[in-house]
Image (cartoon, rainbow, N blue to C red; front, side):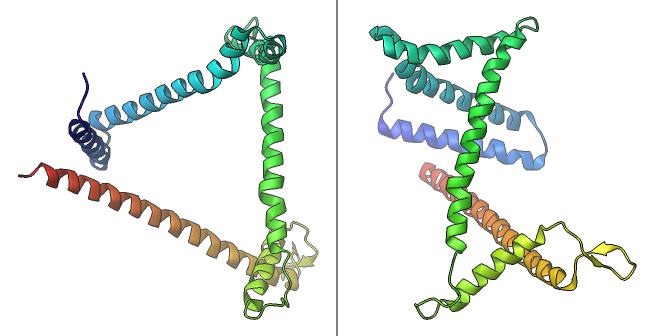
Length: 224
């Protein structure tokens, strides 16, 4: 059965309307309609991920190289295939230690990728971006560069943990200068977190407004 473009558009709009109403029904409390929509989304996502893994990972990277009979390709495929078999051994308590090989490999590779990505993609570019001159050649950006430098330095000083001064009660604490710089850094942190939170709220409002506009357009299109 093949649907016409008009029928497909109507069916997709109807499903979008029903699932949106089902999700919004959670405002009235947990109910079977909301759970049905949630389980449907989870099932569709899992099914889509499975199809992507089969046709974009397993088939081109494992089945096709093994079917071609190339020894080099088979050797490259054999290593991850052995690791997958070892991972299946984790299902049984008696053979679970064999699966630790695959777990150790995944943890090691994942940690290396995460650390490398954090260094090359976040830390070093951030250091380079804040390596600014307080007296740039271009006029009009002195204040901007000064704010970036002061914000970076004071924010880092907020997380210092050595205590050399003393409070009025004689307890160990930050010195007066360090306390002032840390307070300025805390102010930058509060402003940054507030901006991030405000951006998340605005994004949610935009998505909510778009969803309402889509539903209104669908309902309006059904009216004669």
